[in-house]
Length: 189
Length: 293
Image 1 (cartoon, rainbow over the protein chains, first blue to last red):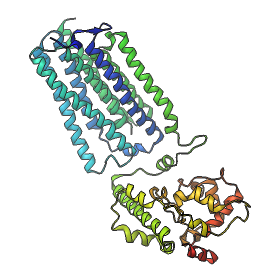
Image 2 (cartoon, helix red, strand yellow):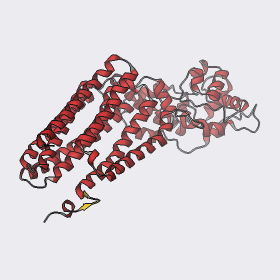
Image 3 (cartoon, rainbow over the protein chains, first blue to last red):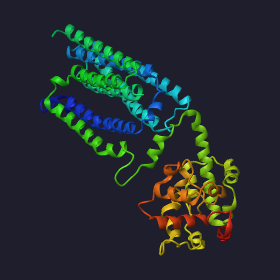
Image 4 (cartoon, each protein chain N blue to C red):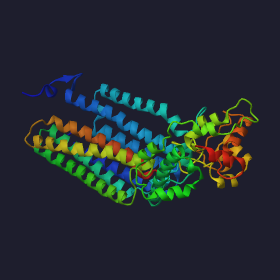
């Protein structure tokens, strides 16, 4: 017996997919509020440009590449799931997870270096936003990676293949948030 | 579309995204501000569009989903439009954001100076606590140089800001005001002592020593009127101007707000005269300050 969410559809959208879109609609407001606050403070404080110069563009760019590539893996997993190939979908989800883990490791290294050089969250307004925005985003990366573990486990056995698309939609959103965080925190100096 | 062409399509989109990423990294290297803005944020929008359309399949999703997302984006825009004017501007019709003005006119904290500044604030905060306590308890703190206070308490100055603020909060007492000489003078019916207590003491301290509860957190510290050196470096006209037009008008901290719209010239003269009684050196005012319990 399948849970009702997977078999019923509302407004001709599978309920699970409708739910993930609702999650993302609320995420738009959460990240939008945070990034909007950052932008308005940044415009009011031109002097933040000096302190933003300490962020490492190359690390940011590398992590962007990692997330873009993991997004490709997520959409290829979705493609495989649509063809009913659970094992192939699981493999691609595994590669997406690898992207998430790489992203988190690079982020840890980056933060470790910055904090050990004294760039802490309490230093000034810029670093406060830097750690809050990138930290909230990193939590989404970690959460997505963990959930993908469960989905890959099921997909490998040919179960709950519709979830491959759902986690993919979420993962692409996390990618989009980073697409905006990258220029905001690393390029605008 | 066959499965094979699906995959190829996705890989093609990914390749475009990577090229766009490379452009956004190269953009700032030319050093043109507008070019950087376009390559940074213009390209971010294009990348987001490509991911949403081709990876999230928003283009073939039900229209309802797009409306839900558009609603979220519009709400975000409303939030921005409603709050940004108050955050991006540092002055308005009836307000000024002194902290933001001060921050934007001074260099940002760097790790090197952060520790020194942090320690300094801690000491000053602690000294404020000690000083404030003495002022209300014994009164002899008026005569002690502020530097000595800092030195004597610096060793124990490891408390957090919250604690020192509590310590610096003044005990309710009106004795300082009572002991002050009447300085109505040029502004009959104007109580300079009451004006000082209501407008100035939160930063400059009830005892005029620059250790008010709000002043403890400021850098630079508010003026200490008990310090003879303060009065040696200024004449009454300069103090008058600072009160009327704000600290920045005389080259001092912009954290000192302008009071010209609250008090007229005669009233400000009365306040300046009143401030003199805090001075621990010079003339009859020494006695008055000395007698302060």
